[in-house]
Length: 106
Image 1 (tube, one colour):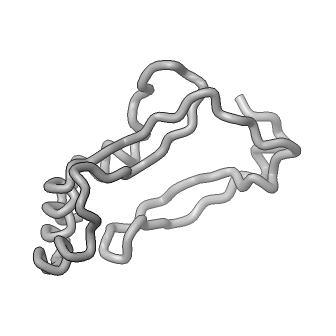
Image 2 (cartoon, one colour):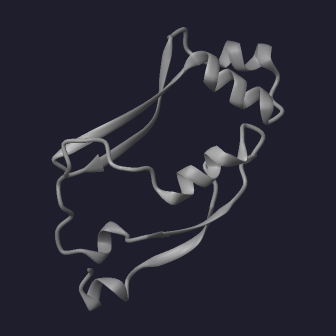
């Protein structure tokens, strides 16, 4: 549970990760709302294969040849870096599950 002085500083708004993505309601606590930002004990790095990244961009309407040219020549790309204190993979956030369920086109 968050202290009352922190709860009152929570912000919210509709955000999207890319211009073509569906905007969703999100909440966050700006780092300026805390006296000291805690340091994470662990980082969970989420990777997608190059093929998956290309497939998702093409499904959103991008030209495959242009996407292939724009991406670096690597097998994997970092999609997300999650800071956490647990030394095991924690469940996805509900918004991530929703975006995954929507499919590549969204």
